[in-house]
Amino acid sequence: MTEYVKVALMGSGYAGKSTLIKLLTDREARLDSNYVPTAGMDCGTITLDRTTKVSLVEMGGQSHFEFLWPDLLKGSKMVVVVTESTPKAVLKTRQLLQKYREQLAGLQVIAIANKQDVSGSMRPESVQDLLGVPTFGMVAIDPKQRVNGYRVIVDGLRQLCHVAA
Ligand SMILES: Nc1nc2c(ncn2[C@@H]2O[C@H](COP(=O)(O)OP(=O)(O)OP(=O)(O)O)[C@@H](O)[C@H]2O)c(=O)[nH]1
Ligand SMILES: [Mg+2]
Image 1: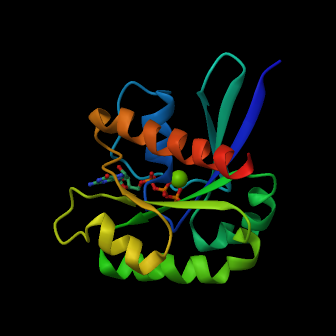
Image 2: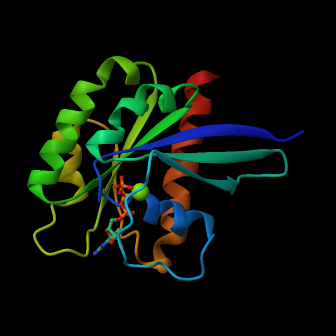
């Protein structure tokens, strides 16, 4: 029987959550650069091994979908906070982490400092200093980053198993 591990993707609108799901799940041949805000939620699946799959659940980042977040977070083993890497966006993401700290308490939380290709981006280490959770740099529109993105998720989950063991 297949076991599904739920991983929630959180973050402001336009951060790159849908793009990351496309990158990791290979659902589409091409990483489209059009922005279509996610209405409510979206999801994709990654196969870890013969018996384990990861459900990536995106929580739509536009503020009018935020009321859904507490429900969408339920049952998550890990939360991946996706942020643009401009100082302004990172500070906004920090506020989101603060706002949802009760719902996130006890969960494994990691961050993705996305859009590292955009000039003026903060380095992942600096983003990590501000967010206070392990942070990994990413360019989600770059198909070559697929393995990198996959590794970030899988390593995060593996760490979780060690903590649980
Ligand atoms: N330059 C650059 N653009 C990116 C990157 N990742 C995503 N984008 C673009 O940013 C825009 C927003 O990406 P989405 O993945 O739709 O953002 P989202 O977080 O799902 O937004 P919501 O669904 O509204 O919460 C799209 O136009 C993407 O093509 C990146 O690494 N670099
Ligand atoms: Mg989206």
